[in-house]
Each structure stands twice: as structure tokens, then as C-alpha cells.
Length: 364
Image (cartoon, rainbow, N blue to C red; front, side, top):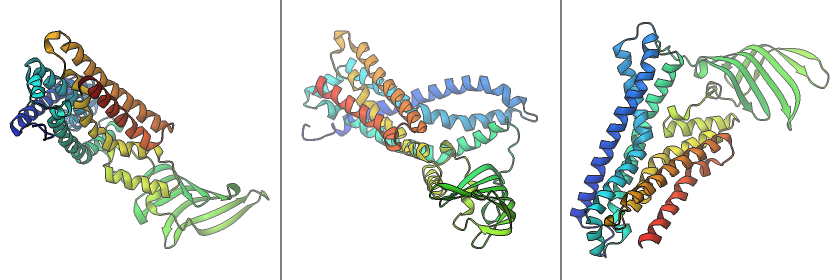
């Protein structure tokens, strides 16, 4: 058995079955308890909206449960890892596996593989279901759980960059080529210096740019205001750059968020926080792979020594420390203090190294 990285097929299937069953059992219990508590605080607001009843309560549950699953699946994997390994240790099954010539890494291999499969399923679930549920729930909460209005693409206070020039639009109505701009201000700049300000009441999309109606230009050097009439500007600005005002990374899939970041880059807007959230859509589900490594301290050591509970607590503390560090790094990334890649991936690799060091020094 030493020549194989995994234990025998029977042993691996036995460990994986214990691990997966406990993971989903713990997750189901967490979802049931947390959804009940959440519903107690939100049901009053939902029923306060005119016309809402039991159907809206169940609709809220259907939108909220995917968010709870997304957030607490890694916690469930951590608790399942500690429970599974503690049970195996208490029954001397870990001692039997190590006595047969298996290393600590080989003992953990089935759980790591199962965690990797769970991470793939989690990413797919988050990308296809959680993002849509989050977008719908956010829109519903903005109208205080009333009937959802039709999204006609109207946006307000939109800024777009066209080369060195900055374009500010008070209101954008419609989508695509049918978008109409209201209260437009163009800051004409050369090498970072403001040389003029163009103002217009309305603007529409025309071939080759945007036509401003009854525009006027204020010249900074002379202080004069010159009427321009109808003028075509912003020839390199696409309609979608005006309709991308606020991007909620939690309400977009990985592909949609990546496309939105590309559009915002073209519009000259900051995207560092969104890039961190985009990479976290991968590192977040992948954190499940870390849990067997961080909880492995509960697997080894003699159960009769009385330190099994202490080892389980240490494994739990390592897992929760990872979640704290992950949230902290993501917050720093949103503030711009950390680069996006560092904010999303630094806690993952740091705790992978910590877990590996603890495992090697204590058992290998």
C-alpha cells in the first residue's frame, strides 16, 4: 500500500462516504437553523408590503437558502472533517491505517479528493444559482419586498472616460442604441489639464458617436461660453459603457463579472475591488480543499491520551482563523489596500502552508 498515494478502494470509499454524509448533514442542519432565524427577522418586513402573503415568504426562502449554502458549505466541510477524523481516531482506525504503512498525507488523500469535487460543485452552484438568486433578492429588498418593477435600464450619475475627456451624465434611460442621455457634462482635457466644459440637455446615439442637442462650450482660458448647437462627441464610447453604473459582483456569474470588468476598464473606471471579488469566486469554493488539511490535527495522536478534544478544538480554530483572514483580505482588497490577486489568494496559500507545516512537523 505504500506505493499508492490513496489507501485501498474499500478504505477510501468508506472514508469518503463518512465525510460526505456528515458534510451534507451538518450543512442541512445549519441551513435549517439559520434560515429559521433569518425568516423570523424578515417575515414582518415581507408581510408589511401590500399584497404579500405566504407565497412571498416561500419566495424569500427560495432566494435566501442558496446564499446560506454558499456561505456555510466550507464551514460544514471543516466540521465534517473534524468529526470524521475524530471518529476514526477514537476507533483506532487511524492507527490501523498508519500501521499498514500509510503516511498522514495518504490517510487524508480521500478527503482532499472529495473536498476538491465538492469545491467544483460549489463553484457551479454559486455561478449558476446563487448569483441569480442574489441579484433578484437585492432588487426585491430595494423596493421593500413590493412588486418588482421592470428593469428598463435606467441609470443615474454615470461617469465615462473618453480618452483624456470625462463625461458625466445625470440620467441614462433605455439600453443599447436606444439609450438617451440627459444633463450631460463633458470635461475636455489635454494632458490632464482642463481646457473646456461642454454641456447639453440631451444626447442620443447616432452613427459614429453621440449627438448632443443645443450644446454649449465653456472655454477655461477665455472664460467665454460658445453655443455649439447639435454636435457629435464621444465617438469611441459604446452604449453599454453608459448603462454600467453600479456592478454588484455577488449578483453576477464569473463570466458576466469578467465581462463587466472589461467594460468598466474601457470606460476608465476603477475595477480593483471587482477584480478581487472575481478571483474570490474561485478561491472561495476552493477553500473546501483546505479544510481536511487544517482539521487533520484531530486525526492523529493517541485518543486514549485525553487530548483528542484539544486537537479537535485546534483544528477548528485553524479553520475559523482562515475564514477570518479571508474576509479581512477581501475587505482590504475592496478598500484598495491589497492587490486583487493577493486579496483573493493570499489567505488560501498561507493557510495551506500552515496546515502542511503542522501536519509534517507533527506526523511525518
